[in-house]
Image (cartoon, rainbow, N blue to C red; front, top):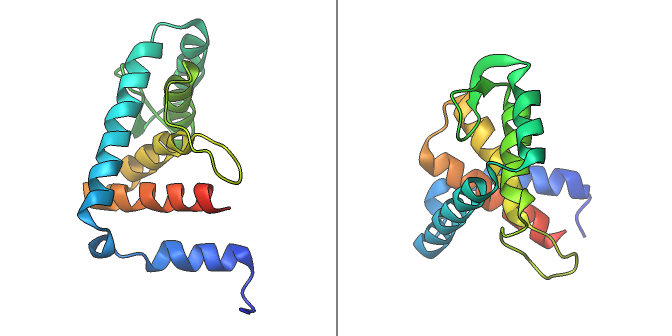
Length: 139
């Protein structure tokens, strides 16, 4: 048994994952999840709670990360929040029925916001989404 804590094992996995090690079928699956999340955003855009989230994000203008469907740029945290509300609002995003059921695509807005703020490549974004899915679905 490893002496590493679960948190350290997760951190090691996340840091050691190479973009080149991700098989093409996994990359294709992540691309589909991205498109699905964007479709959820389009469907939810006009909803009242979404507009509240957008107004909240608008209170802190910062050029770090984009809020979809707007010209707004804000902090990565607020962009992830506003975009996350849009992805999740209709409850049409993907689902996972494992030990703990969940919607792992809830992680996509955070990955997108941070990738944009850090200037990550598309391949690095895909790797971040893979790590997020792996962690959520295996815990």
